[in-house]
Length: 96
Image (tube, helix red, strand yellow):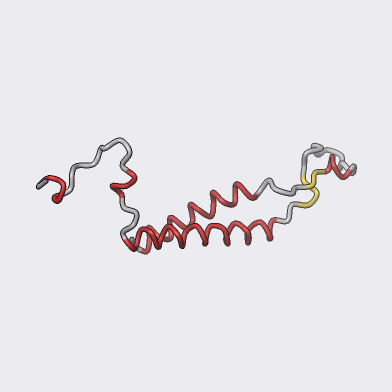
């Protein structure tokens, strides 16, 4: 796996994890009972964005390290993900 592909995979995993973690434990103005004039009741009062950035980075790093290990060791290849059999047969498969 090239360096750029590894970084891209990490960024995609981080973004996916961040979007999953983002709505967890948000306290809204409606829940706190203090609605500022001109804002919706669903606007957040506290969101804890720093902790969510760190949590999503840790989760993405863990998933990335497992995927990187599987790809680098040859345990997971592109042919393993070819569910519709669109790839041409490899040279070893053609001689069989």
